[in-house]
Image (cartoon, rainbow, N blue to C red; front, side, top):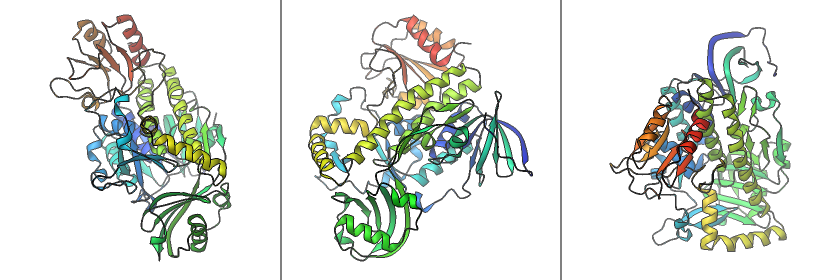
Amino acid sequence: MNTIIQSNKSTQNNSVYDVIIAGAGPVGLFLASELALAKCSVLILEKAEDPHSPLKQIPFGIRGLNALSVEALYRRNLLQELEIHKRLKNPHLNTKPGAHRQGGHFAGIVFYEDDIDTSQWKYRLPGATDTSLISEMQELETVLTRRAASLGVVIKRGLAITGFHQTEAGVTVQAGDQSFQGKWLVGCDGSRSVVRKAAGFEFAGTEPEFTGYTTQVDIADPEKLSPGRNVTPTGMYLQSQPGYVIIQDFDGGAFHHSKKPITLEHVQEMLRRISNTDVTITALHIATTWTDRARQATTYRNGRVLLAGDAAHIHAPLGGQGLNLGLGDAMNLGWKLAAVIQEKAPEDLLDSYYTERHPIGVQVLDWSRAQVAIMKPNPHARALHALIRDLIATRDGATYFAGRVWGISTHYNLGSNHPLAGRSTPNFELEDGVKIGELMHHGKGILLDFDNNDSLKTLASDYGGRIKYVSGPAKEQLGLSAVLIRPDGIIAWSSDTYPDSNQLKKAAARWFAGD
């Protein structure tokens, strides 16, 4: 068990929460909302008193939401609250009339939307949400904070968790001179997670190849720097907007780990060397460092303690997949933990959180490592870079990279042979115009019966409102007769023919358990 760091003046809070979450970033807030949607009591403890940070402002806070994150927000009726993507264009995209529209990149190598063969994604229907959206961290956190508060989540800021003690019945969490009681604790407290360290999770992985810099500077001669992302023989720099520069210096992470102050002189010397220019920086306003260290917890659960987001996995922010990976963790864990808390499912349902999400994390970490490998300033990396550049320019290549970057190729192995099982459900549109994603706002499972089968309606009623029965043909139903959709939007079971009731009952019992 884990030892709490006690204070002699500790104040005991009498409320016992179903879940205590460490961290009020997007992952912690989204997870809290999912739990509260399922009628769980949730407390978030956040060490920062002020949720606003210069690094969350545009353009530092710009993030790309992939298809899975966009779908998750849509299914919880949150997508409509995001406004910035409606007026903010990705600064790396060429949106001039007649120009190729960039869809994303791999190690700075761009793929274009008109090169993508979307016919290969036969389960994405015409009514699907966008494959990607530009978002901004502060806006996303504002929307999720408002959502969590509306559902009754308690958020306490300026309280850093210093330790905890868990028993078979619950967890006592210490934060400053206060202690809190919860049945479960989830660490969503970032790459330096106190929860992960205190709980003794192994954090295995690889050490960094570079130090990355995110800076806001005044440049006397910005025209000397090429726009966009530039991989050079000595590193990489990106000028997204005048004065906002990201730099990668392949020093093995030495400067980041040195804890030395980031000076104007240091940034200028490094930028000149990597850009091979004599560019002059006249002022340094904001600067922070990061690395491509890639590590992942070898398990996501220790007793009544779980991890999600950067607390469970870290990697270089190349392509912005960290936020999407964390939101996916929250969507996957929320309904499962709620079902266990409310005794609507056995505790071993939580095992599927690790078995489903850990492999996805492995894929993202390897995706990040592969990008770093071909960005190194050496002949071997340049040779690989040229090969990938040729592949990504082909139709199949662009489609493959887009499928990975946008999350469209993501699926869980649920042990079924049906190609749809374990994938995000298509946004079926019923004959009355209602789309299936609009029926998922309340976080329930759905049994979608295209053929009005009375036996399926009876089966759904056996689950006490945990499975919503929806019947009737869809405008495009992909040859399916029925699908069972989990609360996170993942298809748990599907049938192309007359449904096998035994197989459906087995799937329903696995994910929703019987009374």
